[in-house]
Image (cartoon, rainbow, N blue to C red; front, top):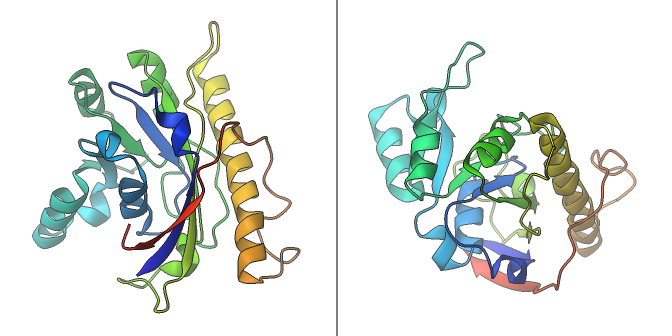
Length: 227
């Protein structure tokens, strides 16, 4: 289905207990890519936040979403109030997957992060695992229910787990998480565009990302098939 290149997994060796995976979001392929790229010991009980107004609007989609992605509904409306369910999951030791942009990007660019995931990490005193995905938009763009044919390439990168520093505010921690994800995304995007022969200068996300990539040993390797 897709050819996945994964980097950064050695950075997750010491991760234990609950955590929150934070990633950019550009395709319905993102959740299965993340679940398939994480080490099995970390993905086994991972619960994914999914938009209630799309994934839980009809019974069959609700069932498939919950069954295959271990997903729970999140209200995206402007007046939505947290019911504390995510906090209960973390307290029970369940790790979470959150897309802090709040919706899918139309062209692969990254929107400003909402601070919910950062706040949860700080409240529960747990790490955030930053991730960057590149190529998912091209592999399964909006309007498609299946990846395009030909095993399109996708790059998945894990960053070093992040914790809030002493005295750091939620806004500051959220900005730091976003900066790391944007930096990782920029690095992976440059490699993706080089590998695919695309025009780097004309790509909408080149020049708009900032920050530095997370450090650590790379374990880049191709992985074919569904993520």
